[in-house]
Amino acid sequence: MASVLELVNIGVIILRIKRPEIPRKFKVPLGPYIFPGLGALMSAGLIITATPATLLRLFIWMALGVVLYFCYGRTHSVINNPHRQVKTSEIEDDFKL
Figure 1 (cartoon, rainbow, N blue to C red):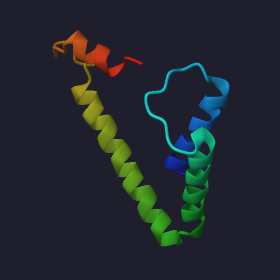
Figure 2 (figure 1 turned 180 degrees about the vertical axis):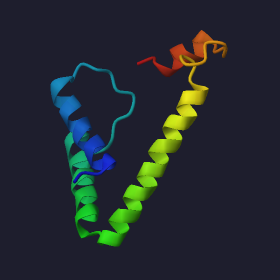
Figure 3 (figure 1 turned 135 degrees about the horizontal axis):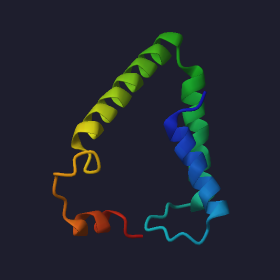
Figure 4 (figure 1 turned 45 degrees about the vertical axis):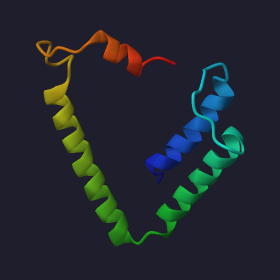
């Protein structure tokens, strides 16, 4: 069982190996392998040592968060609601590398 943070940390390492040419605006000390690796190990340790009651609460809150995320996104999506006006400069700023 992996947490989201653990998967993100592992994903950072994989992207550094498979796609080193992608420009990155933010870099951490001790390189792209040590901190993400430590983060993944610590996250896994927290999940492994958690009690069943804690894990149950975690999954309930995660499920609630996913439901709220999709409900909000469905009603506030620019693609789903074409009448909403968004400045293209705002979108372009979000996706500049």
